[in-house]
Amino acid sequence: YIAYTDHPYPWLTARSIRNRRRSIEKWLGDWRPERIIAHTLWPVGELARSLSKRWKVPWTGVVHGHDVDVGLTHSTTGKRIRSLMESANSMVFVSERLRTTAESAEVQTKKAYTIPCHSEMDEEWARPMKKWNGRWRRESIDILFPADPRRPEKNHYLALQAGEILERRGWIVGMTTLKQQPRSIVWDRMIVADVTLITSQRESGPLVARESILCGTPVVSTNVGDVATYLPKEFVIDNPTPEALANACEAALEKDWQRSPVTLPQRVSSKMVSQQWSSLLQGLEEEE
Image (cartoon, rainbow, N blue to C red):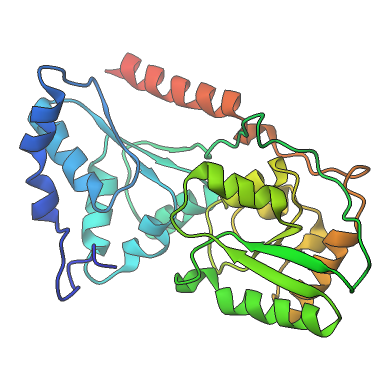
């Protein structure tokens, strides 16, 4: 939140981020890119646009969620994010929902593409999904809440309520949360978890759901992002209540995942996403 200019002590503003141009040029030396890709819009998109004009090269902006879901309607950054999306030579949205949301807000992009984030797991952490073994409602279970509990949109309280219901039924529930850990630690925690529980109010993926599956851990989630396209219906909760989430967690523990494994869609594979980006950049280069 300190990145917003209405914060009492903002340390990132449009002007301050643009003023980093010279430090970027000093760091790059004599090398200059043929294209700039901004992994997000606010605030680094301001720098990308400024460098694009300075170096006379095109730039592409990428939207992962917050820029559209929150920033586009924000009283301070909304106009700037709209301006960034409309001035970029091309925009990439990681989900079709984000793209249609921007279009419904009448954002006039020059070129728009939908390319998801890829999901791939190193062999060290990749595991097949398998059924939980233990004494029913008598043993300890580890539930992974794969987000920073301080972020309100992640709805940590709802996860705690679901855990409380499970404890009333006899389970000894441990709940692990994630903050700013390296990916290797995140994957370690996914491997040891019995269930990954996602209670978010909004997501573009979420990537942690796919990664959890690749680590061999079943996922229970609210109906956000694209989880409904690959998770079994009983584990995607449309009207999330603590009771419904607790029931789904027990169903995930009970299910024989070796007989009915979850298969992620081909469109999120590293190979497919790489091909999409290559096609996008080659196509833009040919147009120029």
